[in-house]
Image (cartoon, rainbow, N blue to C red; front, top):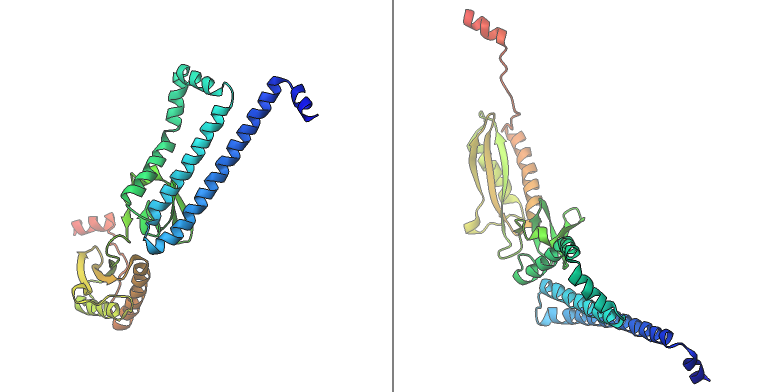
Length: 287
């Protein structure tokens, strides 16, 4: 009975039904394979990161390239299963040169981001977990995809930057190599204040701070950097263990030095200007 029903179906309809089944199987198989491989790679990284010391940045980019490749292959298989579509696409590609150029320009940014993401994985100017300054923003690299990089800023916001822009930007990486940081805090004192007293107060507050490093070759220093319009400018230089510690340490030292200046009579001046009126100048000349 079943055989009779199948034989009763028109050949064109039967072929269409078989094609739809094949396409559905190809799509489902592609999704399943991609998810299984992605899950297997995630489990492998959790195992290998502790024992084989696999770099997370390279692993993340390579894993995503593999998954994208699987979907691309699946898409090609689906296209090949649709009757006449491969030949149609080849004909369109051969005859639509202008459209190809337009599409090429449209995809230029996408391809640029992808190649930049691969370049980041190969040359590793930064890695997942590194502390960086990029586009006037300070934060931690949280994720690197084929299209963009995600930075968790100091405000706990996510800054998403296309990889093509990152490849053209100057990046300060505070994590690669030596983590210690030479930090600077500026102070201004009046011309009437004692420079030596101000220097001793600043050094005393720096050396009392628990986060400041006190190795022999990394002693804190205070230098006169400028004789300004209304202030003698001093710059304190000291070492801290890492960049995340530096900003808070500088802010606390700045506050403690201000309190010591107030109690010991070291003046931090306000900007001031001498204003001379024209009528006063005329009167002076007449006199």
